[in-house]
Image 1 (cartoon, rainbow, N blue to C red):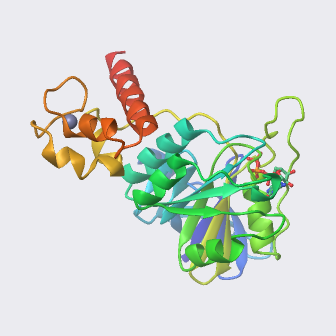
Image 2 (image 1 turned 180 degrees about the horizontal axis):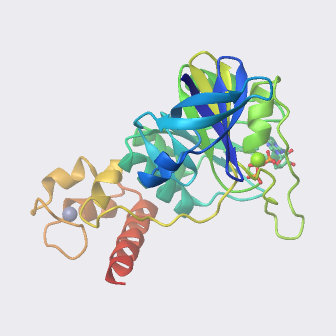
Length: 292
Ligand SMILES: Nc1nc2c(ncn2[C@@H]2O[C@H](COP(=O)(O)OP(=O)(O)OP(=O)(O)O)[C@@H](O)[C@H]2O)c(=O)[nH]1
Ligand SMILES: [Mg+2]
Ligand SMILES: [Zn+2]
C-alpha cells in the first residue's frame, strides 16, 4: 500500500498526493462501514489500481490530530482567519465564532487584516488591540503592495494552515502573492453588495515544502456552533481565562451570577464589551439549539 495525503475532494473522488504524484482515488466500502468520511488533509493508505492513469482506492485513514467541519479539513495545525478592512468590511461576530471553533480543537489562530492599501489611514481599532492582547497573532497585509506578506509567510513555515473567512476578503489572492508558483482563481467584488462572489468552490491543500502546507477554502459568512457545551464555551474565550478564576462560583457562566469577575472586567474595560456580547449571544444560541 502507498501512503499519501488527500489534497482535494470533488464529486466522490479523493485526490491523494504521494511524493510528487497525485492519484485520483475512490473511497472504499470499509470506510463507509466505519462511518468514516475522508476529509481534505487526511493522511491515508491507498492502493494503486492504474499507475499510468494515476488511479487508486482509499484503504485506510490514519487517525486525525484535528478535525473541523467548516472549513471541512483534517490535520491542520492552525487557521489563518482572513478579513479585509473594507470591501467587504470585517465581520467580528464571524471572527469570534471561528476563534471559538479553533480553540475547541486546540488549533492556533492567526488573524489577518487584508487590503490595507484601500485605506487612506489605518484605524487601529481597540478591538484589534484586544485580540493582540489575548495572545493572537494579528497581521496586517496587502496582497497588492505585499505589505505584511513576509511576516505572514514566516508564521506559516513548517505548519499546515487552513485559510478561513468571508468570500472576497482575498484568501486566494494572498496565496498567489506569497507563493508565485500558484495561480489560484480569484474573483472580483460585487459593486452592488460589496461582497465576494464565492469564487473558490473547493478546498484544496497545496504543498509549499516538505513540512509546510496551505489550504485555500471557499468563503463563508455564517458558522453555527455545534458540538460545544454551554458550560465549556467560556473556556474558548481566551480573554476570560484570568478574570474567571476570581468569579465567586467556579462554574460561573458570567450571566446573572453574583460576584462575577468577568462582568466586572467588562465594566472596567479590561475585557472588550463586543467580546462579552458575542459570548452571551453564542451561549444563548447553544442553549436554544439544545432544546430542539
Ligand atoms: N485592493 C486590494 N484588493 C485585494 C487584496 N487582496 C485581494 N484583493 C481583491 O479582492 C478580490 C477578491 O479576492 P479573492 O482572492 O478572490 O477572494 P477570496 O477570499 O479568495 O474569495 P472566495 O474565493 O470567494 O472565498 C479580488 O478582486 C482581489 O484582487 C488587497 O490586499 N488589496
Ligand atoms: Mg478564493
Ligand atoms: Zn463569572
